[in-house]
Length: 396
Image 1 (cartoon, rainbow, N blue to C red):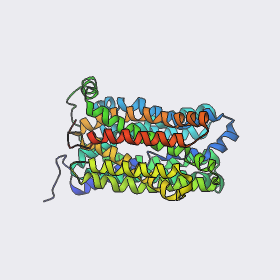
Image 2: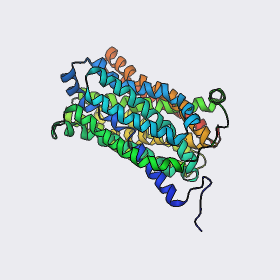
Image 3: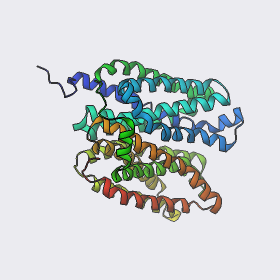
């Protein structure tokens, strides 16, 4: 007789659900990471200023912040499975609209895909809590690893798709709608595998309880500060290296290296953290490596840029996976996980959205990149203080 879990799923159904989750996950970054390498082409074609082009990266982060808290409203009404289905449809539409028209469509599509990705960001941790609570570290590592892989592939393929395959910037961005359609087809059979359970409390009551918890705020700040550091490196690492005298090609490769080592961190760290009841040792170890790498990058005379960039990438990828795992581990059930994921990611992405802008202002005022790196060291120390609390084995 085959064994079924508490949700009534046998091993084959759980495996198919995991495949569905991973196909949703791989779609949560390509629409964002594919735009950066094409900015020059878009500028030449559409004639937008740098500030307005910067909005193409910032708007999705703002959408993440606004939509994340509201996601439990949808899950309480439609269930997690149907909400993810709607998000995939919206993602396909957003990518398509962004790729077909002029300036209005470019921004409308960007906002729509940002909203869609926000739903996915919030709901995957809730699904992991619901269906894979005893393998949370392993499944989170697969999920965060495949997200990082999707981001790296899209960033690397954008220009070749546009130039070598003659698709232009619009065609290059449109390609990722195909991946979203694949995920949609694979997700539909999984909806029936996710039992709808009546919500145990209303949305307002849940938000009131969570926002009154000090642990929730520390977790949200931890998530926000790790994303702040990640988006600063993503936005400004090439400019920092070019300012130090390296050529454009090398700077681009270093950004790719940081993303590649980020995949390793996103896979390895959640497995390590998930195997422990208490995550404080993992958090302290990551901060020590991050601070050493940032100081190494501050002193050009040392050289070894590849080592420092590789370590920073690995730590930021690992910290992202760890932050997602902490949402799962600190929740007592899937409903709490969806609510906690919403509030933590909402606050987190609002903080993250300020990162590239603040560092840009610091560099404009000082013309010295080390001030930005000092800011990242200070943020790492704040993460350490917050992490000592959120790493303890307790529930929200």
